[in-house]
Image 1 (spheres, rainbow, N blue to C red):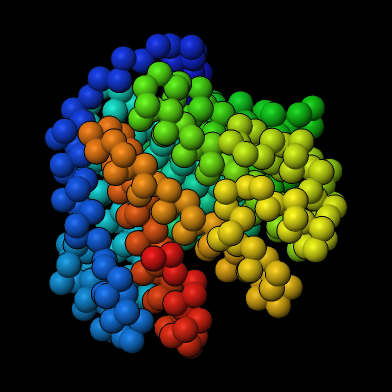
Image 2 (cartoon, one colour):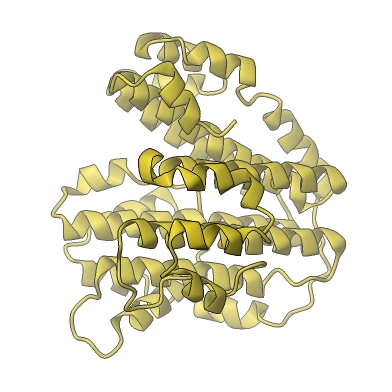
Length: 360
């Protein structure tokens, strides 16, 4: 179920007792994590061409999806569709075999895919994409079912899409972005409002009542920092003037006010200001070369930093939500890595260039 207004009110201020079938779910995700692609296998994949990558995936955890979609798609399209369907199926399984507060936390965390799908549908509608084109880009890995997502994608207008979401916090985000205007707000404004709504609600329902919950909450707040730093660097690189709220509140190390003071700084001025933050050592070298190497490598370095912390947290509390969180993120990154390799091969990128884009 998506985040409705009633659910928001019910969960706000509640005192969870953190019930759930943690030993069972943690054992299941431990087994699933052992099947993720290893560093050695990535080294092999980087030397393969697209047909060999497809065969490799068809022999492992993606076999069912590769077989099911092989008659309709081929090449990079087959790899992207199969990994998408596998991700959605695995995440749905984890929600279904979780219970109690664990299920609530996992479900709320994975609603980031609802946000992703709403953005995809709205962008598709605004650019005049066909319904089937939009549907192929959706990832039903959150609370929205495949059927509901198809229903949204088949709406005639953006306004009809939002009417269907009228009992969720995404409608609140829409109204916030729209303000007093009659027209649909600029897509970038709406997408920023969606992200703020997602993280605001997630933080509301993850109170710091136990040590694992404190670490989970800390992880989410650090993720907000990562997103905000990425936004800060994009704005600076594109010389974009801020005339709206682009940052997400609730970060652990950087407040929105801190970020706004950093926006006008040059890279030379920015580096000493970022030195005090935990992610600095992982990105400082790349920041110095951002003018020549671009933003993508910095973003990947931030993602690697965040993944490392998720893994560290999971080892501290092996029977909590943290190993589940670690697996969800690792699985998502694996799918993205596979896609990067497949697209890189298609586009003729060198092995070293593709390797630099991976999060391993």
